[in-house]
Image 1 (cartoon, rainbow, N blue to C red):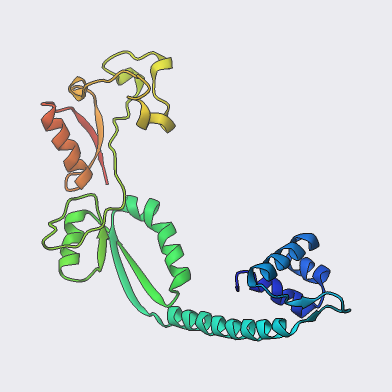
Image 2 (cartoon, rainbow, N blue to C red; image 1 turned 60 degrees about the horizontal axis):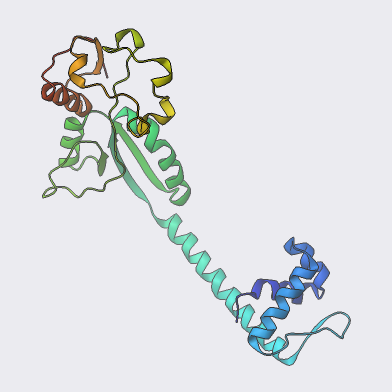
Length: 240
């Protein structure tokens, strides 16, 4: 019954279909059709179209009274929600690596601040072992990590799947790969599906690598992959 309430109420306020249509940024014919559809669904006319300006029928007056009551209730609820959001205060401390802080948290924190402007957010960047100690001591409230945590001690929420790729210059590639067979970076996830050649990690045993420092979980994963492939490639640079 109140599905088209905004349209009907605007016609009542403007006392004209054409004026209401301009205010609603729709065509007059579309507005008129919508109101007639509402009247058919209700089973009673809301407007007396024979008067100038347009007026309400007896039922129309009851409808508008009910609509005004609903608007008041809606405004009260919106005001309550607004106050509820602004009344939320406190501190949220988040731990994450510099990578996650830059590429994941920046937009999320921006959106959170719009909803809860009174909440102070503190961000701590470090490696997982250090952040885990901070979490255990309750210095931070949560952390974002790609390390599997003990579920008996921590509540965890999976955010996304992460993938590891070997990015190599053509001159260091252990097997020659023609240019037309090289994977486009934007489509690298579907390289196998596209029939591109697969190269075993064992073939990179003598390839110089740039890796993260020891203590980083991504470095631990990389070392485990090297161990599984039985290789110890030269590491020419370690970074944070």
